Length: 130
Image (tube, rainbow, N blue to C red; front, side, top):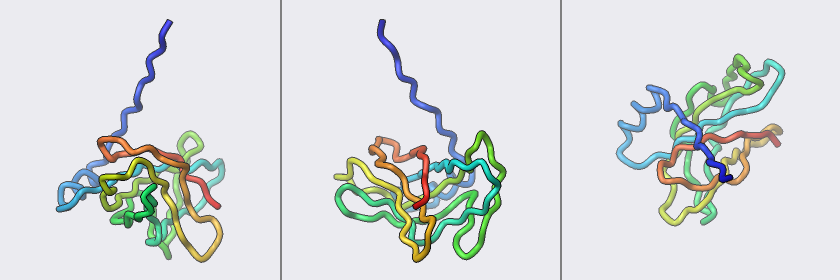
């Protein structure tokens, strides 16, 4: 008996679609899930990027549903996750995989595990803090 793996459907928010349509260059969209069981404030720093296997870094263009440093966003927790979306510069053509990484001068920097590149450059990943 063979099993079939279903790919998850990823909905793209209307504001994200509008931003991508306005961009003259390619973008990479990363829908993030951050596990927590406690109400907490979260924020993203401008020093957040996608680090490719090639060593190149794609810069953050826009964040949705999360504040940019120095501000904080308090989220409702849905199924133990806080969800937000980040839009980055497009990945380079030779990139096969990448990681989300935040380089900040304090604890609790966001990072992801390795993410395999796909044809759409739209991803859903879980993020963690260091």
